[in-house]
Picture (cartoon, rainbow, N blue to C red):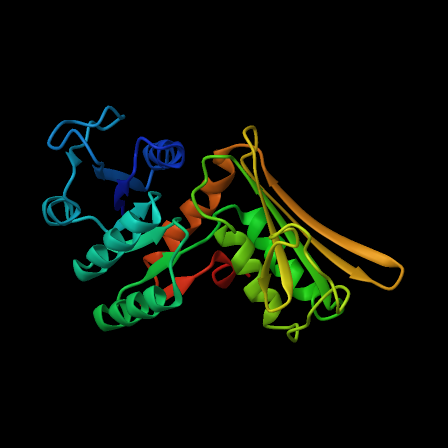
Length: 261
């Protein structure tokens, strides 16, 4: 199998470190460079001693990669993704916080360039299945709430996975205001965020990694669908699948549920 040349943005982060190990341990992957905020021009202390770039455009020109894996922040992720597509590099992005306008712009750019891109709120295959099962259940249960739980250093709330789950459920479920019609919050925010009547609750605590529970309620019964990531290696199977799949795409795909059967 021909090697896939890869650049990783954010190689020193907790997710980035796992991605570096994934690429270096996968026979048909080749790390050709990393994008970081500091140490421009120095060698990255990995297996292959590749060069560090602080300028992503310079990195794409000099290393000529096939794929960018971006696991940075929403602000940097948007910049890196657009630059990658413009330079014919296929982005695999695990950064949340992309707006509908961002996705529309990037989708149009990918289509113009005729290259694939994957943006995934969650790379854990179990989490993707959790979202698909929740969408299936929404056909039979109209009342649902989402509790997403993450480490206390996470920047966005609700999580991309929580929002994506609500979006997928809403493809089946008609908008509905849940609870008592005269319900009043005695403390603002007590009922969580409201997405077409679906309540999303965000928990942020040290000791957590990434966890989500979708709770459906019906007459005399509840249905709970839950996924837990206990360490960040849980996301790497999805990253690997995305890198291999994006090479075969010529459009932008948002969400891993669209590339697994």
